[in-house]
Image (cartoon, rainbow, N blue to C red; front, top):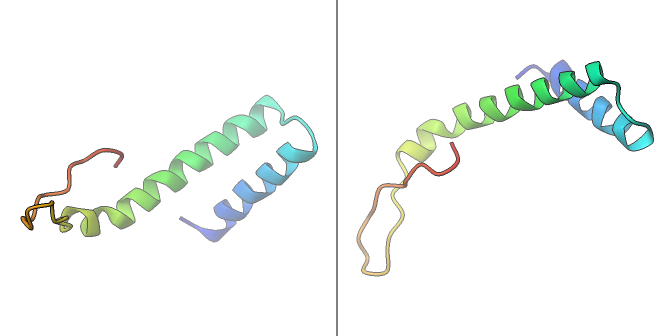
Length: 68
């Protein structure tokens, strides 16, 4: 995700602490947050696809999809 979009999320979050956001600002913030979450999930996908946690018996198990 581009840095200017991350900066805009921060700016809108700061503004929301000072005053109520307009409907357009709130919608923009939610859209940018959704895009940010998607980019983080995409960057972690390869790592998570190759993660095998070890259970109590010492056996590797494929990580189940819960939040990504």
